[in-house]
Image (cartoon, rainbow, N blue to C red; front, side, top):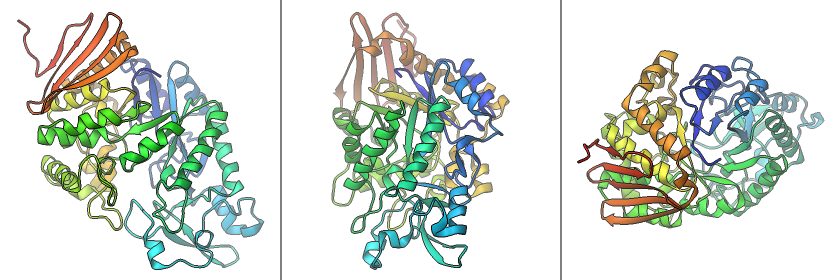
Length: 485
């Protein structure tokens, strides 16, 4: 895929698979691909589909596998392989709870004693990294009355798989077969960084995790699909995992753009452009919020920005959102800062159209495969009402759009500007050529693509928050708009 992809929920943008396809075949036809966030049974569980009861079935309220195959007829389709956990209501887990060792799924789920057969000391247990407050265990009682402590890294109803056991691998193979047969072309390994628990470490993206990624990536490729890995972590982890898979996320770009726009400097961006993996899906926003941890330090290991600079990004976000981002963002166990900002990217930039389109222009000019989140495409601000109803911080960035709201957004300056960038990146021949960048001043950068006689050049100044695009065969695009002499 050389164009731009859309990241969306089927129910929140189109109302289902058929409505989503209508939008992608119509006003949003310039997107070369779509990543449909979990559409399995149920798509609206406690973690909005990331807690599948049946990972092999399309929720009939959204459509069917035939609908997914129709979507895949003229575009890339990405879907999630949730490798770390399943729902506590899944047939596999409930059968194991009821039947224990007689269940064919015995060994599929990770229990406390599988990791600590001789018991765990306090220091070992508290060393595990968890993106939520508290410890990663939930007590369950089996049909024989036996009490078990089951690993639940994310939520009590999301039970972790024991990825070292053949039963878990059989389960993953079955899901991959369903995805492939359903028309999916790229598989995202969700939450893979948490899948392997290694006593004596924080168990996040260890050497054992990398070995698991190699194995599961081979399994995906054997099924004829590409592999995208999702890891929110120190940037060195992205560099380490990039050679093992087809695609990684450039999660560092989003916080580095916020740092640059907040400080009027481009040195940190330029350094990242020098070392970032090129096989990256470039993002500014996702369904999970804006990851700041991805640019920060890890323990004694320096980051692309330091701890105080991370804190400053959170402070500026709080100011731009009138303090709401502080309410919505969760501080993980043993941490002093959240690992992400729960807010829309447009809200964090104060709803400033020119600044927002500048950030998108930089995203679209970087090597890799740009991806736009549906809320970002429509210029969405924080959905504080949804957050107030659910209490889930990430819901501020997960609005349910009506047909009327989509139509209104399509006429907005933000959506028209983003779609212009989508068309440029998708269609201009320069982007099939060579990329280069250079620092113009302490606050300005130039990013360029050249392919024979074709070129596309982006000049940005983060201090004045202005940019200009000059592409062969097209009139210049600049923000703020200027009258050419």
